[in-house]
Image 1 (tube, rainbow, N blue to C red):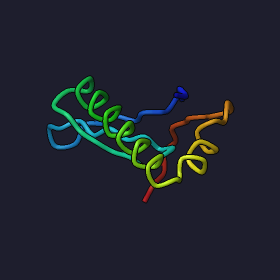
Image 2: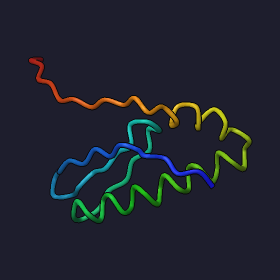
Image 3: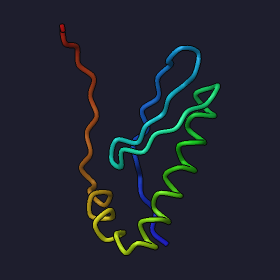
Image 4: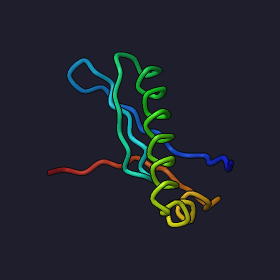
Length: 78
């Protein structure tokens, strides 16, 4: 079993915390940031288990194996 370091983005939206893993496009939510992160971890594990069952894990692992990941915030006017 391989381990991956993934990114979690968490924000508050109408009293609920939304969490998202940008590498996979998987999202979840919770009543607290900690719960949102825990729920996201579970959702990602289920996503990866499903990818294994479908024979798609090699494609997913390629994207997750990169050691060069960058995150940033920026502001736009719309």
